[in-house]
Amino acid sequence: MKIKDMDHITLTVTNLEKSLRFYHEVFDMPIIETDDGRQTLLCGKQAIKLQVVATPHQPVAGHPTPGAADFCIIVKDPLDEVKNHLESYYVDIIEGPVERNGAHGKLTSLYINDPDHNLIEISEYH
Image (cartoon, rainbow, N blue to C red; front, side, top):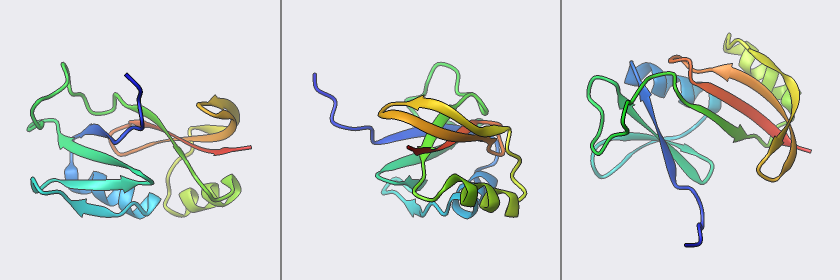
């Protein structure tokens, strides 16, 4: 099997509207409605699907849990500008900037939490 790409991830959340607002406003991710009526966030070429913990979409992972995700997004903007942007939305930076290794080499990262405490690494490659 040869993997071509990753299409989407699904985050389990406690409040759909709050999570949609956070990702749309803070990251400027467009919200689209899919054929099955779900609202999905576009993250570059991939998507972030959201499911509410009380009513997960089938099939479902073994234990869908809010706050269990840890993922990295790559930004085009310099991290100094990203930091200022996050601060303007009163988003706490947990750590960073710090040097890390990404899938394609060295990167510099900031870490934040979303409303359900999922860990989001925001990075730029060197």
